Image (cartoon, rainbow, N blue to C red):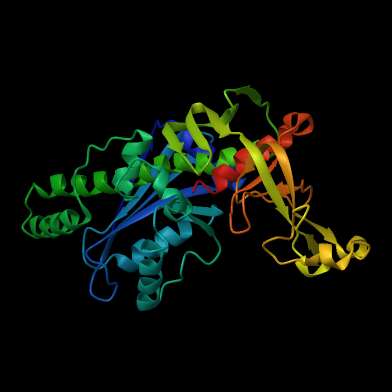
Length: 373
């Protein structure tokens, strides 16, 4: 087994995204990635583990790689990695929950080595961002694709399959004492190193969720009404590395850099508020409205009828503000209206009181961030 240590000067924005997202200090993180000769632990070998972390004393990022330069180092690598992880509280990876962690766990059982993950939490960035895949201008969420989104450009061009062949070539050249073995090793180390850096960069996509968290705590909102539309602009405390635009009807949301803007069309006309407990209401056909039975008993029988779910409403004409479907208004719910009984889109009356409710408009944006549609 060989141990390779390096230091790197990298932008701190990614690690800052992690600290904000997890509410843990910068020195608690360790990014890791593994390289193997196959997918199944039973018939393949673990030949490389890489770790990246931030050293606060040195004020720079550090890399450590445990490399198997023979076929008998797996247990040593796993033991060394487990000991290395002891000071850390959070293990960061990209789709490690799907491959790296289960692979290592099975290898540890096979080799009778303590599993290194029992006392550490883990954060799978891939699983955190895949819910919003439709927002990202990319065909997939593979690590090389996400890296390009965040601005990281690789020097390494190898695939995992390529690395398997190169490791085989390395072992052959080492056996025959071929000087070219060092070049093959450097290719493998570079691939693993850039997987680590790419994973760190991928944390920038967590700013999507970070912004929602910070907006809930309060921020200044700029709003103007023009041509039957509301235009809201909010400075994002977490910049995004590329423009995002999505349109969860009837809203349009655009996020570029450190500014988020939403466009909301106002509705003019007549809408209906439907009462849930329709069995407690009468419907008055002449007035086209429903009233509670406690009051309706005083209306002559020929002018009333038991209400149905579809006509148990009161109607209102005016100007209305659409509400995101995902917005939870349980604590302070205004009267909501719809265009029809089976319509999902709800509205609230757009009046002077609502215009001054910065918190409500902020909640609308947070709902749009949480469920982009």
